Length: 416
Image 1 (cartoon, rainbow, N blue to C red):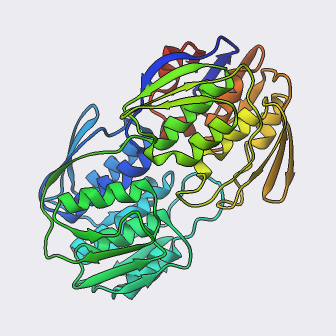
Image 2: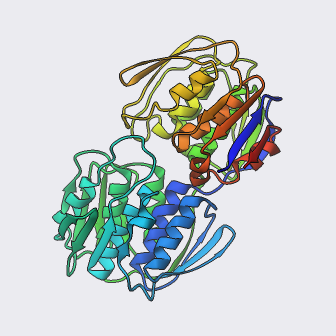
Image 3: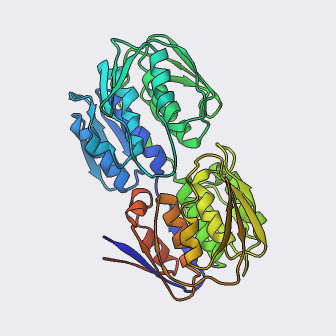
């Protein structure tokens, strides 16, 4: 099993390009199930989760041709509306095939999903919404069985804000009979990117990016070409890596438009940030100031950046309180950061982080995708060597992370 070895080194400097967003690419790949015509995508990141989704779609009969970041999917021969446990068990996003399969094929059999163990993320909102659209759904032996001759438009108000739930219902509604209104919809940029792709395929969608989305069903969607948005979480992660080292970096092929909350906190920490049309430059002080934060659905501070900010607070000047409101198990990185010498106290859904003068290298274990990133960030400044085990989590969400960090001057390498 691969591990990542880091040595405390110089401040990060230089520039790198940001990849396409995993959390946008996964639902957009599933959109290919809605049409018999080819969907051509650019800026698709090369990640384990993307490869898993492509294998899943191939199992269903989708023809896929990939050339680097360019991927073409042809759903003309879609014949097997089943998502098996073997494909789904490592990737929660596989639930996103449920809505498109049901809308196009009239039935679907999808295994209950897996993924990072960061807390309960139930799919009941997906099921409730599809039932409101006329689907007959049962859950048996770990599989969701759904049937509907044709879905019908409905008014759906989700009990909680759910990104994948919003995306699943929006895709299903594209081929439903009549108008569907999704209230309490997720507002994330990835939802908007999916909507933009669907509109280019002929869907009639309005309100994406707000908490009320309207979809007028159409009889058929056609092929299209779409470029996946840049990854805002990858962008934020490299900004934190530069910040903790007192670095000066420029990130290309990205946008600050989706990162207001993250950039505000980095500026509060003492960083100087310059925004360009498709780039962000960060200059960090020798030592950061502690910044408190509270995670919440977009446009508030993202839960996917909580662990990275905890890492920079570990060596910042002062005391910070981090409150996690999205996932109840998303402090699993705390014990690993404490192995590096961090001073962190957990009080329910709050973590109190007291900045220390220095961290010390040690062997640590990644527990989920973003926790892995937090350990890398801390390892960049921990004296000596830090060895991070179980980095297969990283390969699910960060494209060539050790290569990109090395381009910025980090002493990092993958070891077996």
